[in-house]
Length: 105
Image (cartoon, rainbow, N blue to C red):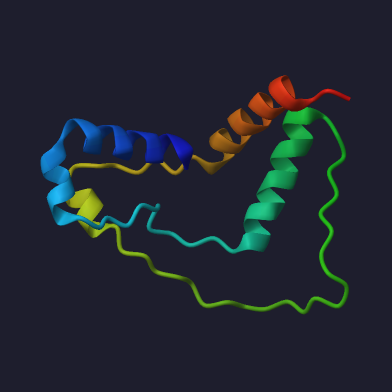
């Protein structure tokens, strides 16, 4: 989530030795399908904005059981990071920010 990204970048800026390894995978270590994220946004949007949010999928879209994606974050964890991955909280904060700053109509 965004706060995790902010923390990692902040540490890298203040600890140049971290960049010696050059590449870090930044993630939670768990995969999420786009559809699952979209459904989480709908749930959060309805709760936070108190509006009916409709998720429209392409007509005839078949269900597809994708295999999980594994992204190793071992290198990042070895530097002492603990990824919070608070998706619901981050979505809530993002929606509140957008409603306060971009809701002009």
